[in-house]
Length: 176
Image (tube, rainbow, N blue to C red; front, side, top):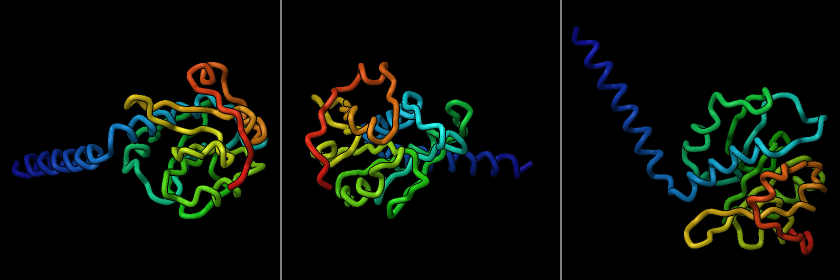
């Protein structure tokens, strides 16, 4: 009889703790995590990488807390499970790499060059350095820009539906 209230209290406490941890993540990064999940739905990878889970990697420090993990948990896209993880160095098994400001952007972009990896970042010069998708704030709203040429060089096809929502930026050169 006393076990049920104790168990209930533990579950509620665990839920509140998880909720508190998620609340510590800014609204900006909650929105960016949702965008990352949705980008996967609108990007087509080459057939040679069309098996196994789709891996979303966060380079270096993780500004998402558990939010990205929570979003992709038990989700699939085109029958492929999604997974997320933090990487401390470039990893060729990542399909999407988010590179936050303050991380060595050049190292991750150099490692992904010539591979079917969707690189996403929020540094002001991210596309200029060779990235594919760059987040930016417009009057407090998270928006994104896409470098179509960079996506094509990576062998990625981005849906026209996603391109319509983006600001298209030319790639002035790759100099990571």
